[in-house]
Amino acid sequence: MMHQLPPLPYEKDALEPFISVETLEYHYGKHHKTYVDKLNGLVKDTKEAHLSLEELIKTQKGPIYNNAAQVWNHTFYWNCLTPEHKLQPQDELLEAIIRDFGSYEAFIELFSTNAMNNFGSGWTWLVKDDQNKLLIINTQNADNPIKQGVYTPLLTCDVWEHAYYVDTRNNRALYLENYFNVVNWNFVAENFLSASLDPQ
Image (tube, rainbow, N blue to C red; front, side):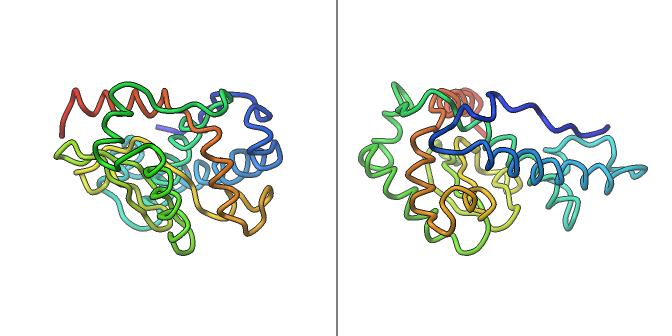
């Protein structure tokens, strides 16, 4: 199969003033697209050509894994964002956040601290583990938590510099502040409820 660059779930200016059109043009239109193109080149005419992104992430190593994971990670990341600014978690998701982190504010602080301390390039994730507990984890470079088989991703933040350098230069803290203004908590809640109904 040929892997496709999925359309963004909103217009490129929809996340302003928190994430700019220019960032979307580079991050989505160049970086994300390049991972798709490289992956298609790597699997063309191989036995891996028919595998889905999830299957590639779970079975492959090296360049195929890296590009497949980055395609998946970025698609998930775009869905974690929304033009509906300053949403907050509700209902069962909020209850689970309070249960496992103490409060919504404590969660934001811990997630941001993890993202700030994620050295170099990588991703910071809110995940559900196989005991139905919410955790915040960091992965390096392209690494994706579904490869480990015990985590269900609920939310991710891209902390590669290309995610924020156009807008905030080297100020990752400001990027994280902007990020939480556009988190799609409805998407996170859908992931949480799906994971709760289908425990690993």
